[in-house]
Image 1: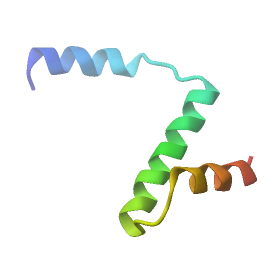
Image 2: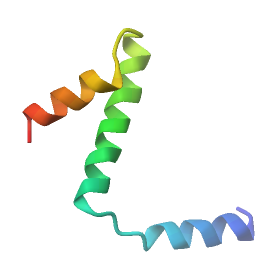
Image 3: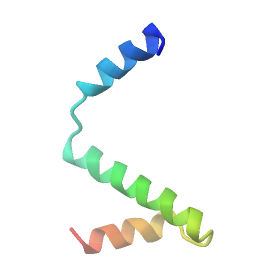
Length: 54
């Protein structure tokens, strides 16, 4: 790996996400994954589904 990539990885390891940030990241991941399987899925649908589980 390049020196700059190693430096970025080192910085990324020290990042601590807040709970709201984690929730948004989970929703984003779920949306992206679902969208691959079903192009009719919307972000709003995923957000509603996430709200039901919290």
